Image (cartoon, rainbow, N blue to C red; front, top):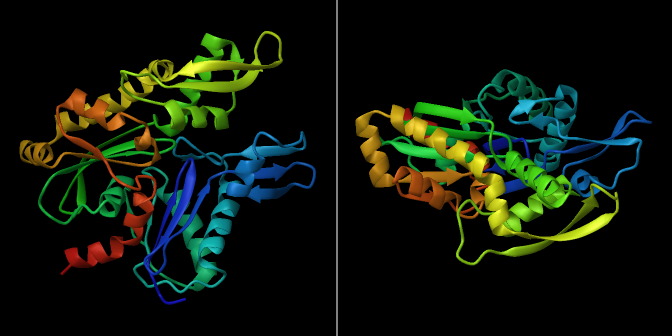
Length: 330
């Protein structure tokens, strides 16, 4: 394989790997199935996700990263090694500018993991670390090297990161543990309280994708959902509307809006003027919630756009960072 830069976005919900030579080479769930009898990992990634909810009593479904924090270091280590090997092969030729983007606060832990396994995969190389909003901006096609203010809102699985970027760096930023996983949990809680129905994470995510919305709709959508009746313990089917889902998500989406508002309040006037002209950019899988961009636009008065391929732009931007950095150093 020819030398290339790679970008890795190891997130709470998914792991993505991008190669400048091949494009997006891996996108799999950050989940593992562990066999307690043999004390070995049975499945990782997409295979593990398909097994979740159907495992026997001797198996455990593990999500080793929770709300942007590594909850199980050993499992994360094995999962990352698996993803890198699957994406890039046993021997990877990577140029000295190889980079990886991770969430703030995990740099040391993830640096240790990444150095170890990328070294095993292909030899010594250097690394650069950047915040997810910068990577998301680059992956979205924003020229972060220019002296203009850009406001990036990255709504991932565990956290939402908000940052004002100019001249390749972060000027003002904030992070809140409110994102895609919190959306799912809010839906599960609402269905349990309002319909006396237990549903799993997969059903909650399906509801979010199919009828989830951050704003009121003139014609609400309706979805039939299945779960376990709290009172009888028997299977039960109920109908859920998108208006109910909006109400369930109101607190979570409201906290994200408040975080964006707080960053805008701290932004220098000149950069704030740039943001009014250029708008707010939404990235990350959580940004795909219908109406999320409209809600932020209504509450801030600033034009807001969810980018195409919002889920993968952080990985793409990470892989392209070496090129951007080279331009900045010219």
